[in-house]
Length: 407
Image (cartoon, rainbow, N blue to C red; front, side, top):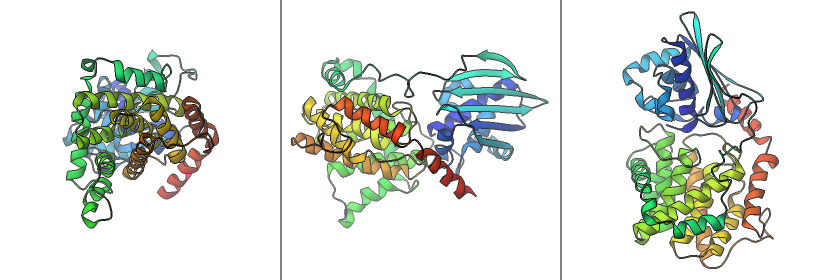
């Protein structure tokens, strides 16, 4: 399932494990970012959306050791019980907390179990029963990078060098990623999930409105995977920088281009490594959760670099493509996880194909184009500041709109 509902389910599972009996009710506090990204996404095996049902299912499967896969162990026969518990689940938005924050309290048998997740989607920092902690980490505000720090020591030249020099055998673990993420894409192309963005793009070639070329196939293939995942498909995906959709977007376009152009596996794996690491690096500037769409902005930037490499381009051309992408898609906002994410993913993958094509022809955005700088790292820094500072109030406006719709 989607990352934020899965994190809610994990927190509820941890709280229920502390309680030690079947919960009668749940109280869950989350940050506005978690709430926004969980309220409209499909929950696997239910045909429903929202944190309430996800947390109820997690509480009935009190196995926090499963991490974000906790919903995969849920007994479908207990779905009626989960729906009853969901009706006794109160979800509220907490103020003044980190972007990644979940507190779940499971009540039952005259006692309560409690768990808190903070900073990362699996970062359990508190466990307790009836107010007595069994595990408690430093609860002070974290000064760690919001994206987790994975990309702090990276830069684009270093990523490019790594992609060229790493022994091919060291990248063979990515074969599992290819298998898992492609299975989700094939599922989305084969069945009518969500808005059917991928299926419609793929079938639209028959009407002559969409060309049957490599770029549009890559966009359709990736969007199809998002169609399925956002609608609650019961298959796993490989994530990148803490997000399944970012994992799909950073990898599937590269795979699609490799297969369409007949590239050897080693070239594809190296291009995947460049795309994934560039995505992680871009997220270091943008943040783990942001007003900016992580898939539309960070992952598509990674794809541009990966495709430029795969088609024989240079580091300078990859940097040119990254600057072009910043000029193009820097305004794509995240208005929550939902089936419509596939639309933004299709748009951003199309932009990545265009930027890579331009770069391979020696054309790209320059320091004369808005927030773009002549230096690629400065460009990514500007992109991050746009989301963190320039659009600081946008998340609350979006949340208010979503809450207003719920009435």
